Image (tube, rainbow, N blue to C red; front, side):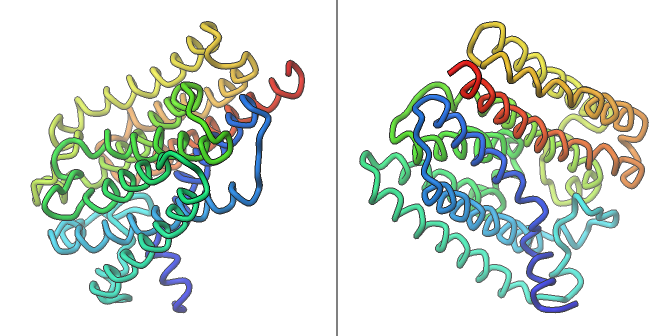
Length: 306
């Protein structure tokens, strides 16, 4: 495996949809609300947040290695168990940590530049919170992902923080609109992590990584998956009828068949890691599709309603 492929594997580039989608959504909501959109600022925001996401992924690989979590995982899948570059001896652990810190620094520099351009230090505050959550998700002394608050942290970090930040860069002001818009993608990214924790159950339990799946057990935890997934769609419908979302955002409901497929597979296979894979993939797809379709809904409302 070539050097570039190894590092793309290490940073888990296919999972960058977790940041790309909320950045797009935040920028689109800003355009819908204010009519303002700057492509240069959009790309800077996207690259900066992707850098922080890459740093987070590498950081997690390093500290899940030092805790013995990934080494003890006997059922890694394409969606769980880390990138495995350390376990497969493709990259030395220290290099993974140094790369993580480098990506955090690069993302931080872009954030500082954007904060310099826009008044109020809003970008600085959001950026510091985001980097802190990313670093201390698995790093001592907080190790948030080991405490039962990992799902909430991911929901916050890849939901409101990113959507509001992307909105602010375009609109240059704060509003409730990006916060409300962030809630469905926030819930869905939490579900991506949540469903990916089922294959990691045994390894997490051995190192006392208290994910919600470990705390509740698989049988109870899968009910939480169904509840949160259903709540996501319920929120979209309610927000639309309450005129918080434009009517066009109901287009996101076309993803319901994929959601039902995820539920069927998860219900039948939550205890079997490799048979669960279609549900893992479907949940990732739902996050991307729902987030993008919400953005499309805002665009259509702007174009046809004004």
